[in-house]
Image: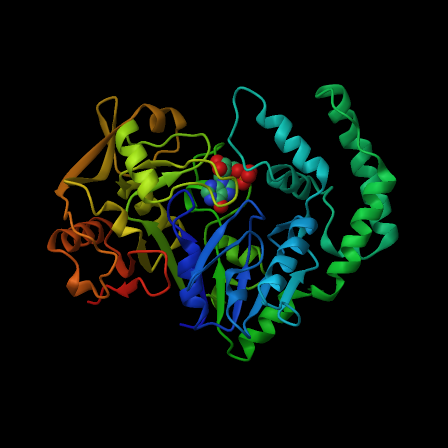
Length: 424
Ligand code: IMP
């Protein structure tokens, strides 16, 4: 199973950073295929904790090659700052970080437009990193790509055309300042000069690596329910965070991908607006938020928390073709008397077991729960499945039987070592 995609099976923040870190040890190349610095992948190594927003988490493993694919949107300032942050921690990216020529570039007007749109009453709750507006330009065919930063004339033409279009929107529709051309042009030319050594044809790099039987790990960001096609649209991000994005976002064909691993928390969280059927009431919300340290790695926003939703994860298993799942943060449920699993939604007398497309149904539905006894024991020091409390095993078995998908790994803490396999 050389080439593996890791995807989030909920609304992001499933603990993919840690899972990717574990799989990275057995991979040669680690590749980001979508999203941008809206992501925040936390990896704990001994006493150190790293949050990576753009560079694949695999960079923390010496000698691994890391690739930012064409499907990613890149804020060059954020990328260069992340490279500097790693250098300060004695992690060198030289010769092992490669950035696609075709990835689209985030400009300040993308961030400004993202922020201005979020001031409206009906907001999405974005990270305000300019992700949506940058992807919108990509699809509208007016975007600026990494390769364009390396060609002075191309950048001049494209940036001028973009400012001609964006400035009237900024001033006339939103009443804010227009953006001056020259300073921005020079700033981005300079970013291009500094990024040049990392930029290459990453499609060729990855396909050559596959031919040489190197093992590729595709690092999904966000989660399935934030996917622009399969998520709770419009409360989604603007890319395909599902497994299909691994092909379109890297130039590696689907036939070259061997396995899809889905990561799901033992409960559910989401950041930002949008429907969330199994969301907790205030008391349990606060308890789990504090215990699970449920605050955004990118924005610091408190995450909304709720019960495990098998309708959500079942939907993810289907649209990603997930082969096995990793259940993270089981320990966060250690102190509960009883635990609920959502098996369906009731709306207007009808039971939904397929994830509904209608935001109206998702907002108005009532979850159908199965309730299981809690285990009320500390699981953070457990090192094997056999040693888990009986009720914790029953909880996992129930999830596995509802989802009809193998649980491969279980995680009971943020450290690399607090992970074990479920076994047969
Ligand atoms: P955007 O990606 O900044 O446009 O935000 C769109 C939606 O995706 C918002 O609900 C964000 O909170 C959510 N989102 C984006 N990135 C992440 C992430 O890495 N984890 C969790 N939610 C995210």
